[in-house]
Each structure stands twice: as C-alpha cells, then as structure tokens.
Image (tube, rainbow, N blue to C red; front, side, top):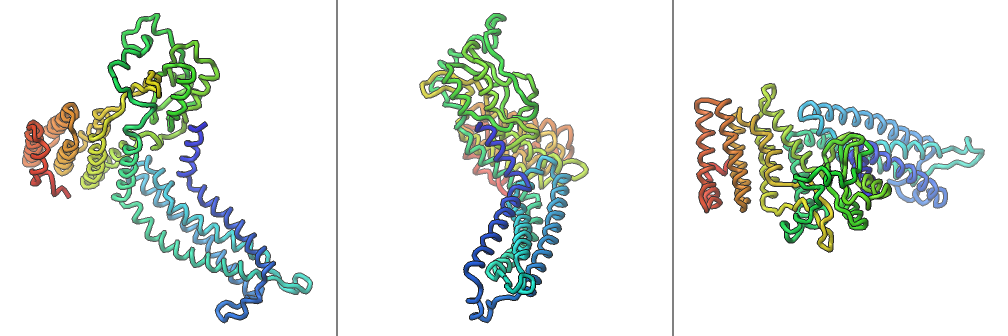
Length: 468
C-alpha cells in the first residue's frame, strides 16, 4: 500500500497538470465564496473611498472580460514556451531529464496562476446582471471584482518571474545542479539507513544464511525456496523496505531480494525468494508483491544510480564529437566528485539485514563504494580520455574523492580508475596533451602511495586546486 502511495505522489509531483488543477479548483471555490460574501455584505461601503468605488455592471463586465481573455491567452503562451524548453532540454541534455523540467514547481505554478485567474473571472462574470436584466434588481460583486483585479496583478508578477525562470532553469549549470543536489540528498537520506539494521557481527550473521541461498547450494537445497514472481512489467520505482522486513518478521522468513529500485522486471520473473517456503502462503506472497511499485520509467525515489546516470549522460553528450563541450563535462565531474566524496566517508550498510531481535530477515543487493564508482567514473573514463581538459579534471576529481577515503580498498579503487584513464588516454591522445595527462596521473599515484596522502594532496594545490 505504501509503495503504491509513494509511486502516486511521485507521479503527481512530476506531472504538469496536478498543481494547475488544484489551483483551478481553488479558484472555483474562491469565486463562489466571494460572490456569496458580496451578496451578504454588499458594496455600498466602497463609495466612501475615491480609489475603491463600486463599479457598475457594464464596467465590471469589461474589467473581468479583459482580465479573463488576456489570462487564457498568456496561459497558452506559457504552455508553448514550456513545451519548447522541454523539447530543447530533451535534445540537448537527454530525454531522461524531461521529468526534471516537468516537475519544476515554478512552471506548474505559473500555468496554474493564469488558468485559475481565468476561471475566477469567468465564474464571477456570469453573476453580474443589471437592473434591466433581472427585473429591477442589479447585482455587481464588487469584492469579487476587487479580488479579480488583485489576481491580475499577481499574474503579471508571475509572468515576469516566468520570463526569468525559464532561461535560468534550462541553463546547463542549473540542470546539473538540480541533479547533483538530489543525488547528495539521496546519499544523505539512504546511507547508512536501509532495510532493517546492519548486523553487529557480519561474519556471524553470514553463517545464518539458509543453505538454499548459498552459492554452493546443492540441487536439493536449492529447491527449498518459494519464488514470488512479478505481476507487472516495468522499472521498480519504489520498494517498501519496512513492509518487507515486517512481513519477514511476522512469518519468520528469510527473504532474498532479486531486484532493487531502478531494475527492470517482467511478468513472471522472481522478485523475491523466500525460505522456508511452507511459511509463505498466497496472501503473504501478494503482500510481498505489493511492496514493489513498478512503472514505465526509472525514478529517483530510491534509485541513486538513476541520478548518477543522468550526470554521466550529460557529460557523455557534452564530450561527443558533435557537441565538443568539455566544460559541461567538467561541471558534471565536479558534482560526481562531491557525491562520491560524501559517500566515501560513510559506512555503507551490509546486504544482510536483521530485525530488532538480531535475526537475519532480508538478503539485499550489496551497495559498495566500488560499484558506484564504476557507475560514475568508470562509465565516464572512455569519454574523458579523449579530451585533455576532461581528463585532467577527471584525475583531479579522483584526488578530491581520495581525501575522504580512509579504507584501503577504496583507495585501491581510486588507483584503479587512475590507471584506466591513463591507459585509455594513451590510445586517444598524443603529444603534449598525453604528456600532461600522464604527469597528472603519476602525481596522483605518487601521493596515494604515501601514508600521509591526504596532506600531500592538500598541499599540492598547484594541481588539486584552481580547476575552474
């Protein structure tokens, strides 16, 4: 239930219709409320103010007609400009970034403001009638008319904001910043929190893994499990980890998750493997399926890899021969280095998850520093190696990430990608460009080989700093 609700909220947040619809409904309610208030209070008190005199039917109609007509025209223009910006961003930065522009709250509120003002004016306009039209009794909702004028002034302010907002939003640095900020927030939110708790003694907990889930399980042991198959085809957008752990504890099960958020599943594929199988009835299996929300596209709700892939895609497009924009790739590397630096200083959770009593309940996909480095710097190595500017920034970014690494295996990963970039650059570059890349790679490796590598890298400002 929670998975479906989270998927719905994410869909509504990234839709271009939800916020304008809510604002339109609010405008309908406001129009009805103001007309009702006008019918009770009246407008005779306005005649005492020179700047707030009560309007007559013909004048009120002209004002509301002008405001309403202009608002729907501007709304159409705003929609056209937004679509043009979305098309441009899709072609320039990649189609997966469309959702980022669609979920932009500024665009949604702008369109909603103009539509809401139009509806408000239209509904108030139909309540105006002169004495001739109503058999001796005329009605002009002057309070409602005053609110309509105020809405028109607000709409002008929103239009000015929108004119500034659109070009600033599609600026490449703003696009990258938006993705990078979401990636940093995702890392901060997810690590070290995950399904259940990490075991205090990982080695001891590993001995409790059922035989059916071991790599060297026999054919007989391998059959001692129940397969919970997927009922939909698409990308896993959300996994209700609390529900999975609760079900495992309730039925005294050990679950092995076959997919994680961001993976593609097909009807009939194994979502979860359950041991012992006799404790998992059909109702339990249905509850486990409901813990997964599947959609037509990847989502950043729980999938950090999706945000990493977006930065990699922007950088790869920028370094393509048709674009040849290394400084956009440099900006992506800066944000990736910030994310990996944040990750390097964190304790990543074990893939073995236990409940409050310390019993093994869930075997998840392991999340490692090396896997996320491969997803980011590993994917970009082939593109950066063909450009000297991008290669130098790539090595600088690795140096910055190493400043936050305290574990030897993570430093080994940094050295690995330093060597890979130099190897690829040897095939793509030559002459002065290749010499500079090799020199920078040697400086980084030399620093990493020393016990006080952090001090050496910080002191080496000649190559680590001044990267702009």
